[in-house]
Amino acid sequence: MRLLPLSIALGLSLAALPALAQRGRTPPPPPAPTACTDFHAFTNRAWLQANPASAAQPERSRLGLLASEAQQRQQALFDAAQRAPATPEEALLGAFWAAGLDEAGLDRRGPEALREALAPLSQFRRPRDLPQVAAAFHRKGLFPLAEFVRLEDSQGSGRPLAAVPAPLGLVDPAFYLSTEAEARRLLGQYRSYVEALLRASGLPEAEIGPASEAVLQIETQLAQALAGEGPDARSSDSLRAQDRRYVALGFAALMKALNASTDTLVVVSPAYFATLSRLAGERDPQRLRWYLRYRVLHRLAPDLHAPFRNAHAAFFASALRGLPAAPAREEHMATLLRRNLGGLNDAAYIGRYAPAPLRERATRVAEGVRAAAIEMVAKAGSPEEARKLEAIRFDIAGSATPGFDGEGLAFSRDDHVGNLLRLSRWQEARVLANRPTPVDPLPARLPAVQWLPAQGLLAVSAAALAPPLLAGNDASPGPRDFGAFGALVGHELAKRLEPGSRGAGLGPLYNGFMATPALRVDGNRTLPMNRADLAGLEFAWAAFQKAQPQADAEAKKAFFSAWAELWAKSQTPEALAAEVQGSPYAPAAFRVNGPLAQFPPFAEAFGCRPGQPMRAANPIGVWR
Image (tube, rainbow, N blue to C red; front, side, top):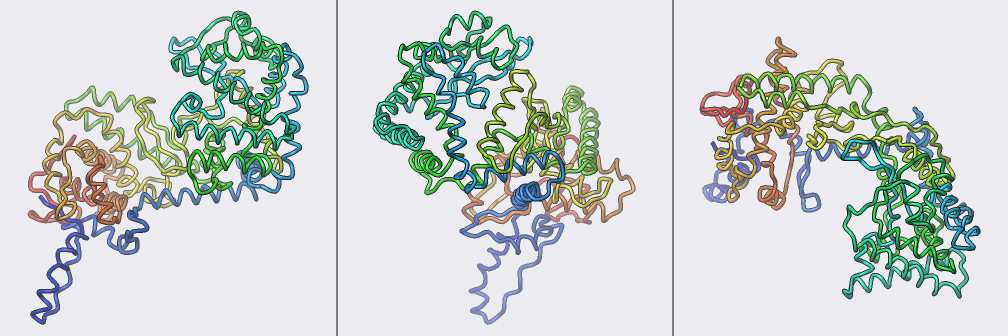
């Protein structure tokens, strides 16, 4: 069977216009698609006409629009959280966001914030002062030499506490060690950045040169240590033994100052800490004092007053990344939020946009599809595959993740640097107390329905609980819920299974589909996803029938229309060609027409006759 998208059919019809014009006749308009000839075009005709692709936007899709709508909801959440927070999570989020966007406030408070951040340096007079200086920095939320994390122990004996290297200014050690001309040029620009920060901090001009040289020398030595051992290099020993091994760093004194109770300590990258301990033992601590100053400046530079922000942007945005300008303040804040407060943002987003009734409805659909899949797979003679489905856990908008626990965390609306330091202290305190901060496996703000094999989890983000996946506000699932969201859940469940030769006929079938008159779909490459599409529809339809055994003809049509609307997509010929040649999925039109033509309940619902494109003579099944 050969199915042509509506755009191709129109193109073939238009090609006949010149000949008809020569005969003096007006050509008839191309026939409108029907449900039984091209269900994708029939269902999405109005959407496709309203959303044409262009050179400026080569691809437009309904799922892409869902992502844009989710981003708009995220921005609306930020605005509401600043103006009138509805929950404690929104209050925290709003204060953090408002302070970070207030560039005038950064300029006003920056000098004072910097003086407070650098205050521990006044205690650093002799090498033996380093442990108390490090503790003072940690109490402020600054970790210039080492950070603490909890490791996942493969032996199952808990989550041991570990000291890990603080990131270098240029995170990749290769930047410091490469002899290539481009790397050396960048290193020279990085030196200028170091000098700019030291100068902006008020360091006397006579010290700028020696101080920047000391910073580069120390970072190069640390880079050599990091590059000289594997990424898994570590030593696990008692805290007392580690304290003796790295005597100048004073791990035991630091743990005591931070009220951390631990008998053992894992040191990740022992060579880094050995080098650091040797540097800390130098008779004159001036070089290390300069280095600590720089580490604090570099940590806070993007969030201090303008000279620091500008210097950071000039190197990291322009020189290193080649960007025409630094990221907008909103983008910077979004990055901070994503890296450090994903759980808080998820909790606020879920609370506002995925209320309990909506999550419960989605769960009912997902569980119904899973139950139908288990029954269908077992009946097909694959009990082991059915047990795989039974073992899958669902995470619907964070349902399998503990809620965000912000105990002890507080933010001010006019003290961004203070907020960052309070956040760092809070995070370290939780690490030292062995209190994990769980984060949803999928960010709430990004629409996704995804099988995560490493976790044995089928995760659904909060942003996915919206049209076209879930429509309306009904308490009970409707046919469209099963046809869209349910079929996507079924698709992901099917990816967990080993189908053997089931559905193998989809390979040659899709090989016969022409995306354009000169471009054929690769049925072999796209077979796994095509098979998952059809299996997902089989599972979702069975779940729908069980949930609504008395469903009328319109409800059945709505089920299939919901699937087709998911794949509304317009593309330029170039974008379509690129997709056909590289994607593991078939083009959108065939994700609709391909499986539905093989699914007898579709032909029955729309009255498709034998011989019509959307009714296969010998339907291919996967698990039915």
